[in-house]
Length: 390
Ligand SMILES: Cc1cc2nc3c(=O)[nH]c(=O)nc-3n(C[C@H](O)[C@H](O)[C@H](O)COP(=O)(O)OP(=O)(O)OC[C@H]3O[C@@H](n4cnc5c(N)ncnc54)[C@H](O)[C@@H]3O)c2cc1C
Image 1: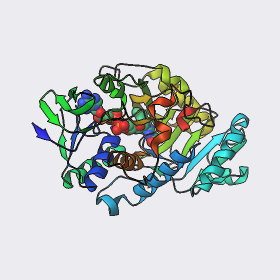
Image 2 (image 1 turned 180 degrees about the horizontal axis):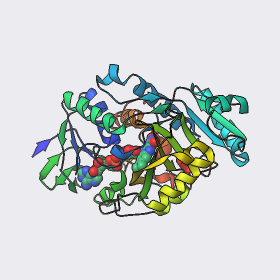
Image 3 (image 1 turned 90 degrees about the horizontal axis):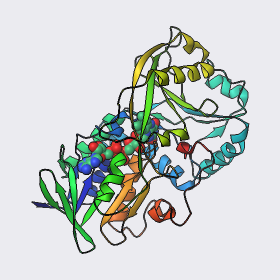
């Protein structure tokens, strides 16, 4: 039995970034995962780093995180594979006002983003069909990173700062004295700590239940496909969020384009996170392939190179829950990132460290993400029906 200041359950981006930040403040941290670092959904993330959000808090967190990805090597002494491609959001008439409001909000918090004229859009996406669009915005600084590299870099940096990493160590119980958490029970023994963070993503609801807390986090199967771009299209294109065709896509090494859906319907694909089908469906490949060709006609000559399925941890408003539940218990929930938590990872670590150390002037106030917002009828609202965009 060992005693820590904090135990973190889950070594995805949330847990690893939090462990790193807490250790930087001198806390003794244990980081536990039932598998290996980044082997869950973080390691399967598309890794897109954009700042297009509808509310100030997440926009500021995305901007903070972008700076962390840009300066990763200096700050962590390690690689995250950040590739700057620019990010374009494409919308049709019904979303024009939302796009304009979002861009104004983002500019107010210091994000480099702009609305594009049709001519400017054609210049940025010369190979793509754009005549059907009414509005577009562009973030020149955005791009994508390698999520597996990133999460492992955070884990290594955390370990260098003294964090104890326990892989293949499943938390099977939470230990309480009265209303206060005092540690966890794992398949390999018990650990003590007065503060425990549930950063278990798609398992977040299950782990919360170990504390007798019900949280609305659903584990949902989502898919990603890959297509090899045809000859003449070797140059990487920007990351694109195409609302009209309800897809996002980005370049990947090997002349590939990675594509996934932006679809609120993905919230209904609830699965058991331990036994779901991790293979991509051929119907999905056909479907996203057709959507891609509508935007990028030359992809008609692309070659499909497969894909995979992984999990989103989806909440009712597609925003995370970051809160101490119940209040005063020492048990913190930091999960439910609903398909957009990778890019926020660096900022989330800071939020967790500020919360657990009772920082008097936290960089980001996580009140917006409190669990009680659902019971209060105050969910986080976005500008679009495609809530994943935030
Ligand atoms: C296909 C796909 C594409 C995505 N694309 C993007 C994107 O482009 N940009 C973006 O910002 N976000 C994206 N996301 C979302 C992003 O990847 C996630 O929000 C983020 O990785 C969640 O990280 P996490 O650390 O909170 O959870 P996870 O990565 O789910 O980690 C949770 C960990 O907890 C462990 N665990 C669970 N139960 C226990 C237990 N009882 N004991 C010990 N350990 C336990 C699991 O093994 C797992 O490793 C995507 C996600 C997917 C699946």
